[in-house]
Image (cartoon, rainbow, N blue to C red; front, side, top):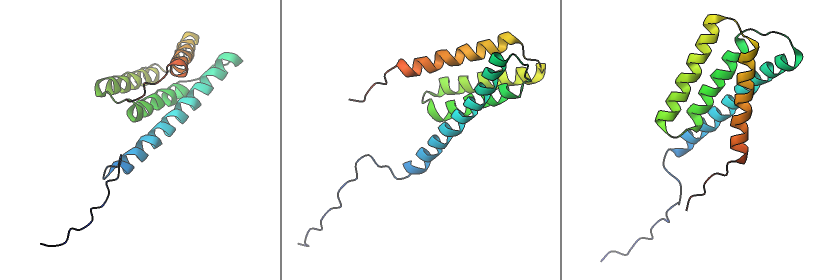
Length: 127
């Protein structure tokens, strides 16, 4: 009988190619959050300063929403619905070319509600 070779211990929680996919998700989260912040900051400053803006901050904002949701949301139906909604809204603002005061208010308060949800919603811990 041949002698038994020692078995290599299993590495828990590590897949073969999970590192590259995880890096792309983190990069998507960072880029999406940065784009959302840049677009939101321009919209917020135009509300508080009282000056008018064109559609470019809305394109940046909704593009960031699309990138962020692609990286973060696991449910494919919800992910692609949010991406489609964000891109449609960006296309509508691009087509109209005009931003009214209530457009800026809706984006501002919608962002405040979403941020408050994520601040106070405690994620479920896996058992």
